[in-house]
Image 1 (cartoon, rainbow, N blue to C red):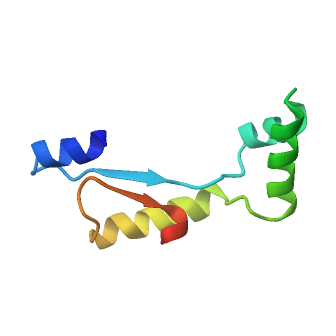
Image 2: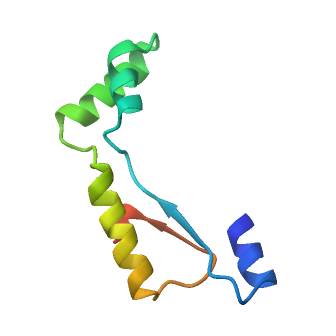
Image 3: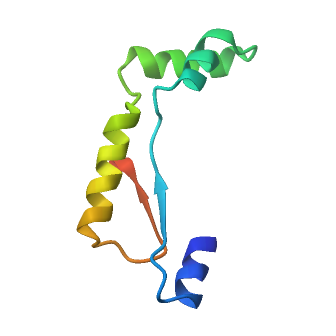
Amino acid sequence: MMFRVLAAEEPDLRVLSYSPGPLDTDMQLVARSSTADPDLKRTFSDMFSAGQLLTCEASCAKLMKLLLEDSFTSGAHIDVFDL
């Protein structure tokens, strides 16, 4: 909502809320190997095993394509899985 308001109040500004998806990062590795919460550990381990984690490069490539195409509405929220 903050980005929608900012886009409405500042029409000369281009604003985007981008959800990069579940990324395979060092933090994700710690979450699935060292967390004390067994449910969280299982959830993240299952996502990794099922190949559901994205590389940072893949998510970034989608974001860069979106930005270069410049076809999104300012203030929009776009999820990596919608691209």
